[in-house]
Length: 398
Image (cartoon, rainbow, N blue to C red; front, side, top):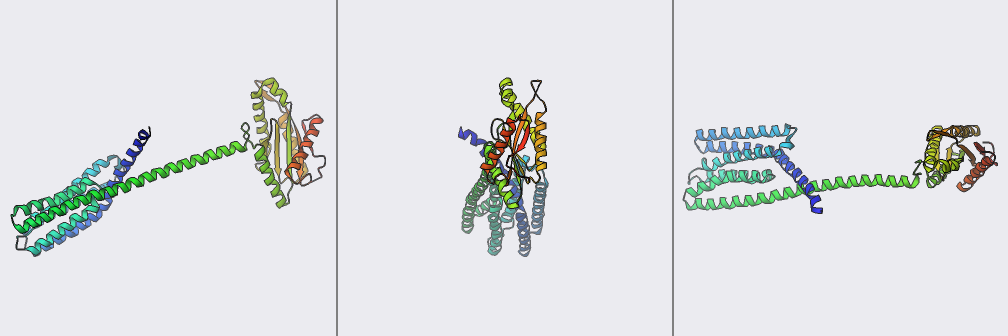
């Protein structure tokens, strides 16, 4: 099961690596073009000095420049192409063909320009240029294994055949040296290619892992926020539960103390809620609670806090409650809003609110006493018919 799940991921990473290898070899091709042009010019200049057949020399040079220009055009087309990733194999094969042609052009220096046996200095110069070009091509072309291979073989194999055909002890020694050099380059190509490939594979594998870790982190944060909300909010009404209410109230009291402000606490109980629950069922009671909360929120400020701390027990925190008249007006509006009929199964039902109000700091300076004072005021309202509000009996004017 694990292997089955991992296979698509490995294939995706391999595809990314293949694309990156082709992109890298094209980007590095500029260096190869520049070096080829410089070295070919050196060969021409040296060959003119060595009295090489100028017709053959210039024919080779023109053909060489045409091949280089064609490869430069191919490079430019690749860089400017916007949809190259969907045709990456084609671009890869075209580059390999260009490398093959480049290798063939360099092979002519070893088969056509290599001077007779007595001109060892001239031969050494050509061999040094050819060795430098083929060795330098390893890091540039090793991104694509077959590209590096065809270039090296195309450039050096004709030289091996040329030395072998001369049937001279010295040339046979040269031949053996070139063979060893060629085999060494091929081994180096394989090792360099695998190093580059493994590095790219590890990079994309790490990138994929980082993406998955980021996604997992984001999902974990979402889950934590959801769990935190579930732990601090009422599952039905989505307002604060008792725990969050106490935390918010404690913080509000602290801020009120620092800023020398007043704070009002509403403790509200819904009259006739139990009767409606028993008559119409708990689903009806839940619908009713949602309507009640919506109506309360429509009256309160954004800075105020509403919480459901029990079945039909609702608390409201009014911060910076400056005037008693404003507090009383809010309580009155809540009572009148809740007293409006609510439809349950197409039937108008009525429910009322009994609100007790306590004040900080006149009634109490801590949570327990402040809640107790509002609770006493609420029961005073219920005992006197409900559907109203009342300040704690000990509340002084604010």
